[in-house]
Length: 346
Image: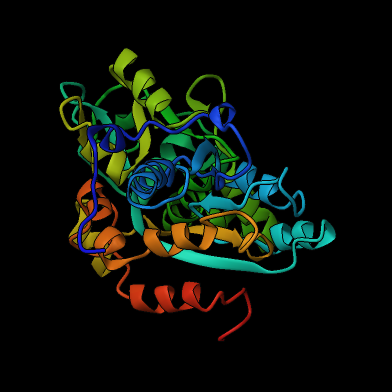
């Protein structure tokens, strides 16, 4: 195959409804809302370039997708789970319990987590991880003491930030984006402000202190978004002071209404994510149920197509949409071709 057709409908990234599948000859995919637009583009192109039905792609979040993936083996279970986080031991344990024993991990590339706000809203253009923690953490360090977060405006703790009310729309706990947000922003900010050490010095174990660092404020200051990024965008559009947490690709496709902040002085873009300079980036994955290969028509072909150079390479349509191509893509292609499962080839 020398060329790939990408129609306007593919680039519109509309996910196919699971209810539209007429029979179980479709590959079925669910999971991460971050991976959703990429998977939707690939699914549409796959249906147009191969003699297989267009795969059915649903969202729902990384954890929810992996939970469905691990329900068991058979035509009434999904074939692929999209995820914006690595698979956990707890996921693998659930899979094993339900007879899902051979899992193929496929890393498709990288994405960054960005903090974006209304284009003409307050000047939210430069944050440190410590700023996000001081704004959103449930307990923060003030005058040497750990206290319930008293801050109402960003300028309360950093005079370089706007005197605007704190309001943030963050990914819900079922999204892989939440885990990256917690570990690379909240936890880092907690450490940078000295709050974590103060908690430990106050008698907390390190594990308990880490848990406390990840607690966020309620009372409408932080709002969990369980839907996809379109819901976050709608909330930001309706709230001039609102800051939303998005994937880089979604932001780049909405620059007509959003502006993005630097983190640690680094602008989020393909180059800084590929180099590792931007501090809030993560790999993106999908996981294949090996037992379904050869049973569900087109499953392996879809996976190989997804990670092909012409699709996931630096000059492919996924890169054009915002995916940072994996420098080790050839290794991933080989692993998919060989149906290499977790734990093999290590």
